[in-house]
Image (cartoon, rainbow, N blue to C red; front, side):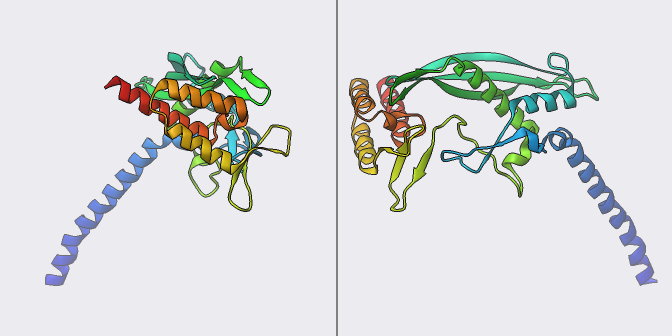
Length: 259
C-alpha cells in the first residue's frame, strides 16, 4: 500500500516536470523564430576574404541580408525599415573616417507589432594616406551605412552561422583593410598594394609607436603623425598597429584636455 501511494504521488510530479519542459522548449522556439530563419547563409552569398589579417574568413553579401529580411518580415518600408540617425567624420592626421548610426525596426508578421529600435553603428574610410598620396573614397558613407545595417541585423540572427557555430568563419572587424602578413621571425610587415616589397619594417613600426605614445598634446600628435605619413606612408594606413596606437593616443589626449 505504501509503495502504491508513493507511485501515485510521483506521477503528478513527473507530469508537471514534463509540462514545464515542453513550455520551456516552446518558449525557446518562439524566441528564436526570426534567428533560425535568417542564420543560415547560402554559399552564393559568401565571399572568402583572401588577403589581410582576416584572410580565410568569410564576408556576407549585403544584398542577401536585405533579401532575407524581406523574406522574413516583408518589403522594406512595410515589414522592416530603418532610419539614419547620425552621420559624422573624424580626422586622424591626414586621414578621415566616416561613421553612421542607424535604427532598425521590424514588424512581427504574426502580431503585426513593430519592434523597438535596434541600433547599428558602422564606419568606413573617406580619406586614406597611401604610398602615392591621399586616396578619397567617394563611397565611404554608403559603406558605413551598409556596415551599420549589417550590425543592426546581426542580433536578429541574419547571417548568424557565420559568426557562431562549428562552421563560423566570420569577423567583426573592418572589411576594407589592406593586406598584412607575418614574417618567419615574427616581425610585422605591411605590403604595398600590388607589390611584394615590404612597405615598412618591424623596427620602424616599434619606433613610430614609441614616438606616438610619447605625445601629450594635439600639436605633438599631428607632428608625429605627419612625420610618419610623409616618411613611411604605409605605416599610417587603416589597420596597422601604429594606426591603432594613434587612435588610442588622440582619444586619451582629448579626454585629458576635456577635464
